[in-house]
Image (tube, rainbow over all chains, first blue to last red; front, side, top):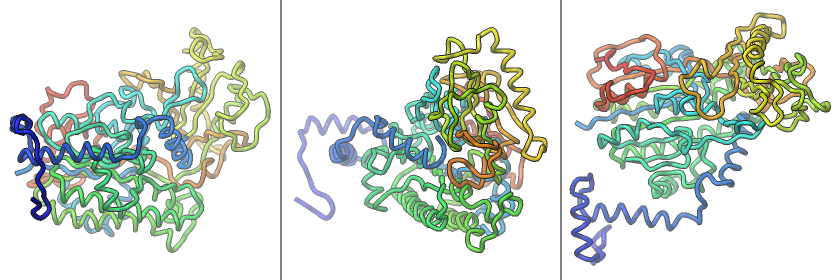
Length: 73
Length: 464
């Protein structure tokens, strides 16, 4: 069922209970709040272009090029 | 009430402009100052953006951090270096410290914070980020929020170009977009500490200083460019107005700069001077403007070489340390003494006395990590930057060697502090960049006893 901006997905009850316990002492208002947060992060990671380990060779070259243009190196 | 501190970092903002020349034209900064204590903030040595911001937000020295500038020499190599990244900052950042008490932070623009490390809150890395295609936020999903808001997110502007009009436009566009992002974070994220560092101030000062400052040796009056720096400050002032309206009553506010700025007299070609003094030998002649890394240096007969920048890093060619080292460990102490004497005796192009400053890292810092230079030299109190290139007939260069630049760094930046119910107001004593970390820590309830190994002190007792 979809109402307004939200929709419902199903997760196993046991997982729901684990999350409920987990979020008790955190700033998350509800299990939904937590699940949304975690999914956003995971999805963003997957969506991001196939990315090498940050600050690999390519990154370093980019930064060096910039610092050179800035006259720092 | 939510405990909140907003830190506005203005890279290179000097007291002479923010408290002096411009203040009457910046109504919102003026209003903030009227309700604050404020004064000069002494930078670290070297007074350079990297490491200064991390010195501020870790409370540690460049020696502790092992970061001495935008590049760190690989020990033993003549001109090979690494670029410091967030991974090189091994000490606890202020946002990590207060997270231990559950406080959330939003951190935008602080170098080096790329690649962003996880924190209790939100981060957008600073101008040492490869591009907005990189993973420049924490959490990673924030990147998509930012890009859906502003399209392309700009980290910095290349200011060393003759087309100043384009530079100015890019600076304004970059900042307007960043302010959109800042407002978005303010609107949508719960935060206790918010650090927003704007690099644009430094860039606009480097690019436009000669157009307004009558004392600048190459002062060039220009109707439009003469107001570029002021107009840029006004852009931030307008934003500050809306911020104060919204948060002013229940948020503490700090404005800080990592170092100051002043007009540039010129660039000193330190390697050409070394050649003349016999400290360096080339195998061949070179074209003017050759980078030291590309020069045919005869390392078997060279004692000293120098790197350029707003300060000069001096390296000695030491036996057993450098590949072709020729100064023995026994000779080293006397060699250093004699060399410092020579540096101190350098005068200006007209024979005028210079106030040269030489620092020995092991004397300056209690810990010296990483690969420090043997000496750190400020020519004429920083008025002359150091040219990293060589091959000139005359080692006094009226212009910068790596593209147009009108200003250099200065030792003193600014601090401004205001909080709801503040008791003291007005101009106050000089503080140090090392005082910021303990002050923010105390603001969030940390006691002196909990903060060991620091060099500064909280100044909250001055205002409460």
